[in-house]
Every structure is written in structure tokens, then in C-alpha cells.
Image (cartoon, rainbow, N blue to C red; front, side):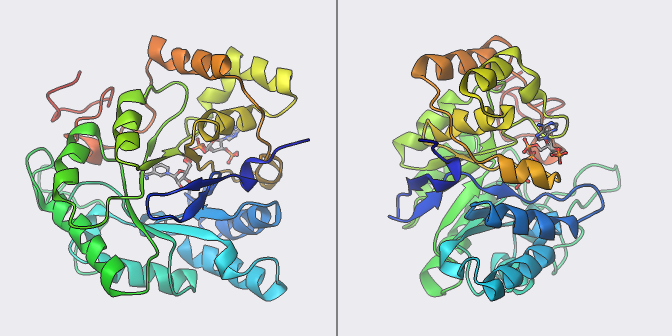
Length: 327
Ligand SMILES: NC(=O)c1ccc[n+]([C@@H]2O[C@H](COP(=O)([O-])OP(=O)(O)OC[C@H]3O[C@@H](n4cnc5c(N)ncnc54)[C@H](OP(=O)(O)O)[C@@H]3O)[C@@H](O)[C@H]2O)c1
């Protein structure tokens, strides 16, 4: 019998269950409104998890889709898992960022609220500009990205929001490297993050970071499961071979790589047909999962190399002039 990735749930350290395949909502260039149809297509195809963020600029359109889905009776609010995130330039006011997201999404709580990056940028009261620049053209930081500790205060604010409001069901982190996670964990007041979201696919080995998360009962959410634009992961001969063997799409192999190992996968697509047909879970063997992992070990490749990731201690981060531990 066909098994569906969209039916799988993973238990979090707070007892809640997160759907193992979510829909990513970074919009296609210049077209945030396109995300409305993507959400409608995904939910009607069985997805129950939507991953978004204030930074993506698509929350208003997700809100419109949700209203339609609720009115048509396709799903109820409690059937969905919705994650949003506070961006580094909004680090000083996470609850204000959350309120903006909730208003745009037209809902009164999110299932998970993430700190988008352990970085503090010099944004104004409304979080803008999201990528502030100094006179030299570099990022304008409010705290040193290598030695600063304000990012921990941001996590504490998320804990306070969880404890003192009904606006979030759980809290988590994103783009936390091993050094940043090791700094945060002893300082957690009460709520260990339920998830850590970072780039992960079979071209990028992440076993050491995943093991650290596992040790602390933090579920890994893999972003860029096909490697982002151009979908380089899907061109790998091994991925194509497995898709043929199991009679599924290459996208379904890329998601199964995570879900079968207890990780969440959050692909995105502007192709509605692709969204609708990327739902199956092929039963890859442990030997096949190992072979896929070895592709990245042989030639590690990271596709997200944003400047705000400099200094966090991630390996293979192209252009990182701040992290010293790794090449
Ligand atoms: N926390 C963070 O900092 C962070 C960072 C990055 C992403 N994310 C989250 O993760 C989600 C997904 O990440 P992503 O957008 O980087 O990665 P992705 O899902 O790995 O890649 C999406 C890209 O792959 C293309 N694609 C997919 N299947 C294809 C196929 N069969 N043939 C050709 N092209 C194909 C899509 O094109 P089409 O549109 O044509 O399908 C799209 O351009 C985001 O939307 C966001 O929610 C989070």
C-alpha cells in the first residue's frame, strides 16, 4: 500500500506532533501573491504543515488561502501546523514581529515560533530594513556575530511569549550551528527548542549537528531539501536511480531521505502540479540512505551562503570571513 509522507507525524519534546512534510513558502522572485495558490494546492493534496516567516513577505497571501480553506471546510485551523519566524532585524521585538505575522496570516496562534538566525541586525522599530547596511556596505549588526550573546536574550523572549501568551504552541530555532547551540543550551530557562531548522540534503553532511540535536531531543527540520533553485540534488544519478526503482519522483526521494530518518522536510515549488504530486514516501533501505549520505561526505556542498550566516561556525559556508574554526 502506498505510504504518504504528508501523513507522517514526528513527536516533539513538548509532546506535540509535527507533520513530517511541510510546504516552504519563500515566494518566487517578485511574486509573493503566487504563494496563495501554492498553499491551496498543498493543503488540498494532503499537506498539513506550512513553513513561513515574516521575512518571506508571503504571509498575507497564506492568510487569504487559509481563509478560503476554512470557509470551504477543507480543513480546520487545528488540523494544520503553521510555523513562523522572527528575523534578525526584528530581534529587539519578537512579540511585535509575531503579532504582524498573526495579523497577516489571519490566525490567533502559530504552532511554532522560530528564531530565524542567532544573529542581531540593526533594524528599526518595525524590523525594517531587514538587511541593514553600514557605511562600508557590510551588514549593520547590533551585536558581534562571533562573540555576541544577545541572540540568547532573543530565545529567552520566545520562552516568555510561550509562557505568558496564547499566541504560540511551541518555540524553536533555525540556523543554529554546533557552537551556537552549545552556547544556548545551558542558558535555556525552561523550554528546550522543539526544532532546529537548517539546510540539509544528501549533498551536505550534517550528522554532527543532527546528533547534537538528537541528544537534546530537538527535531531537525531540513530546509532546501532539493538544494534550492535549480534543484541540484535531483540531478544526482543515485537520486534518479532510486526514483526509478521505487517508481516515485526525484522530489519524493529527496523528502524520504529526511522523513525516514525522523527529520522534517519543507520543500517549496511554484509548480502546482509538482506540489500536488510530491506526497509519497518510498521505503528506502538503510543501505540506500547511507549511500545517499555518502554523496555529501565525498563532496560537501552548501547552497545557502548568506552573509548573515558568517561567523556562526558552520562548515563549508562560502565567503565566511568571520568563522575561524572551519575552512
Ligand atoms: N530557516 C531558513 O533560514 C530557511 C532558509 C531557506 C529555506 N527555508 C524554508 O525552506 C523552504 C524550501 O527551501 P528552498 O526554497 O531553499 O529549497 P528547495 O525546496 O530545496 O528548492 C526549491 C526550488 O527547487 C526547484 N525544483 C523543485 N523540484 C524541481 C524539479 N523536479 N525540477 C526542477 N526544479 C525543481 C523549485 O522550482 P519550481 O518552483 O519550478 O518547482 C524551486 O526553485 C523555503 O520555502 C522556506 O520555507 C528556510
